[in-house]
Image 1 (cartoon, rainbow, N blue to C red):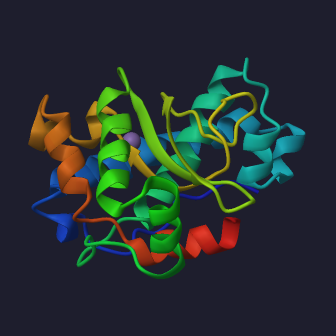
Image 2 (image 1 turned 45 degrees about the vertical axis):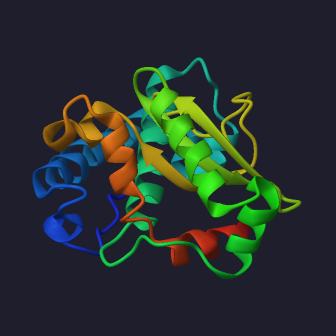
Length: 202
Ligand code: MN3
């Protein structure tokens, strides 16, 4: 069963001015579509054709670079489109806010730490907020399309929030100003979705 590019639940221009329409069009329609078809090519004719994306990631042979890059690229972007949206931003509430306060002292401090992880990831990659099974939250970053749940990544738990810091995610609008893009990203985070993921994975 082949993986499919998931529907985007908002229009390309819905996240303006924070994420511009052209970036959305290329990022979703070209980059994510490319990871999806390359993932399907990488698993074709193998037993992984019947695996879920989570099974593929958790059992990954890290030396298989085509599968590593494209299973990660597929999964990471699925999560990314889900946890951002129009009329979002602000601060989390409920269980997630309590947990962020417990783990990082305050939302502001969490925001600083997460932004720093995203700003200091050298080259291409992602910064993450992950939850462990005991409810503990962790901020980390990964290179390229690596996912925290891949074997031996050393960045634990399940990702519930991620920011794509590949240049393709921001360069048209922000050029080399990655910190401005990171600031803007906080205006499109769908905290309700992140809270749902927190509850489902802790
Ligand atoms: Mn991307």
